[in-house]
Length: 287
Length: 64
Ligand SMILES: [Zn+2]
Image (cartoon, rainbow over all chains, first blue to last red; front, side):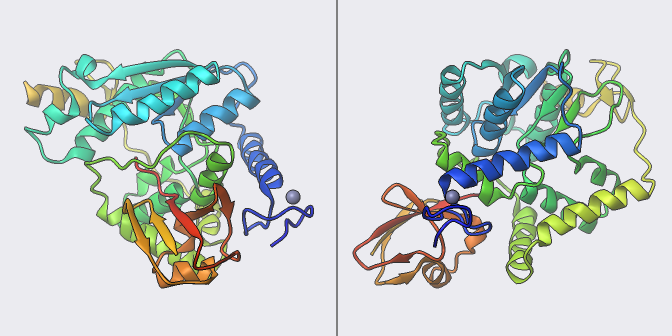
């Protein structure tokens, strides 16, 4: 197979491109998303939520390249044999690319590592997710935007899962950039229209050191079902994932979805749906 | 041929020569979920491999 733009060998099929032209195509796609959805203003201070994986590393690299003013932020939950490994790759990447890295630790912020917390509670993703979201929002204060590595597959899966679970208000989270709300740092997703396979190919072709490591607590059985269905739809009908996201964006623009109202936590002052936020409630339950 | 499947972290031996897309079909792997690497180069589903080749099948799914 030959590249559709030159006579080099293709390394990717849809679209059919050689290494150089694939890299150009991918970077242009990300730039187009940034421009079309106005993800960045010139003077924005941006923090990239990094895990050491391919998606967030790609976002970090491209925002550094296109925008310059970026800091990497990582959260060390304290998952032995997993996060310690991914953070080694991230530290090296930031050093090589001259990017400032800030790491926040569950142990320091909440008194315990996730491994220790889970000896008392056995719903890892919910505990971890609550604390990660909380810490990310809190530590990103002072920045204009938080960029995350969510790709087209992640987002199409989230839309479908929220429809199937009837979580209408959560549909508002699956957007290239969240709207401005007091107490929240705006979140943006430069890889919104890049498939998981495209991101993986880009990271591989650029030689990013992002080995495959799976979180030992991974328990996303429903997401796996949805992921498999979406991959089957895509096989039968090319463009399914993109169509879902494009129609989703049009729909949430056209209909009015009422947001759950929020107040501020009486303990920590962060945005919350009740008098005490979920993170503070969890911390109390561990004492 | 020698095949390394990253997601399962295992090496397998399999008699095969033909297109990568048919190899993936045989292994019941959806091509959207993997990248295939031969001699450190990214190859596509349309590329041919023979029995004396060795390939790596890398997962594109993020681990979290
Ligand atoms: Zn080319």
